[in-house]
Length: 608
Figure 1 (cartoon, rainbow, N blue to C red):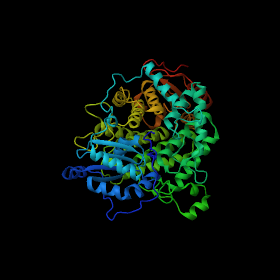
Figure 2: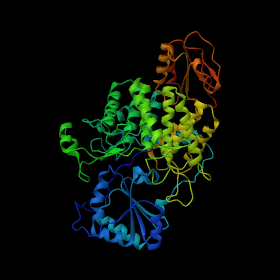
Figure 3: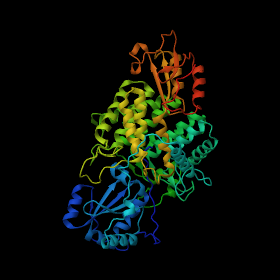
Figure 4: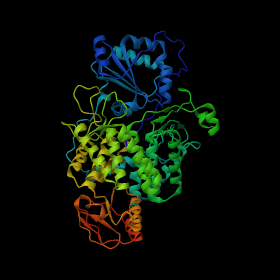
């Protein structure tokens, strides 16, 4: 994500029958509040618990729970007597979503009046189960200790994985693969983009098993592409690829666009490009507003709470005759940053100027309508809280991707501004890593670091350090690594440790660095630049210097005056002999794509 990954809706199995509807609707329904400090102040005054229903507006089981559990008379009576009810759309509050992402949607969290978490439950809870839960908390409000263990303040002594720990994390990643059904994970089937990227990196170095696992997962993932409208369903249940849940979430679309682009760049199989185009067509048709920015999601249900398998089995005309599932038309900076990065990657891999134009248009809109000033971004047009790390981080990475694609210095300036805003607002003073929201005192919930955001911050600031030559960005990466690599932080993360393996490798190794010298109107230089962008490895620095446009990047004027365009492969301040043709450069890039990884501290300069 990622990566921030969307969590799936889940059904909590309680051994009871799921009610179609309550037999009796009470005259006074539950009063739902928004999340605020005032709710907890009221809870203290009235000696009540606070129950958070953290839902997703696209989620089938969230709809079912709203229409059954929270209309049940016994539930309503207990809630009204002893609880204050809070309902929040998790997409609107990244701080809450990050905190409870492991509990799926709907997540049910019950707090003491002082904000102490008493119990956290995953997924749909049927009415009788909810009655038992509410009464049990009233009878014994002691927090469930096992649920409140965290490693927020852990700090690692090193920012590099030892060979032994690297091997252990890789073994965890491998163990997550399902040899029977294919793909990573057992109960839910979906594509994790960091896992695919890690597999592609290993495959490029000759790992045949990693290559086969990646190919099989990408092939099976096509089962989750809507055959009528395109777009990717969030996941498949039941441990197989044949039980899709039909919500379409922007993070899933972005991850699949990125994975398809990487696979196409590495293997050239047109099937990957076909899938990417189906997803892109869906985005343009259903989830893009007239200004070129994307919405958040499309619901799983045509009628909230009613399964829609029969609806999604229809053709386009049949579906439209019955209506369209609801689209959440919020425009969030974070989600648009994910899509902008994916579009920039597609433009680099395919050379399609249309993807570039879409990415730049969306970036300009977000910069105009969601910027906070000083490089930061708010989430929505108006935020109930925030700012959140995810929005500025996603836009910073998008700006950096656009800079490499376009070589336009405005995008680099905005990426640097985003990094400085992150350092100023989200760095934790007394602990390692960066918090998901500003680490202020006396805020509920207390800001904490999030795994995917910190590993993506490592990748962002590492790349920014290479582009600018500035050591302070590398220091930011090391700060995140001191939390990510601390004892306990990777516990129970399963195969998602792939993202950490990718980020840590990038932090300790040099990128593939290609410098193109030549005029921006020179066809040979243009061809060299395009070939460099197509290089499958994402850990790369591609620069194009036209002497007529100004000084060289980072002031490194180490290149000879030549009468024609040339390309150089560089490392540790030294560069290869000039490569004078696109074919010569492509040959060398192909060799680099399968070269073993070398540590930054021991990497040799590129050889002639």
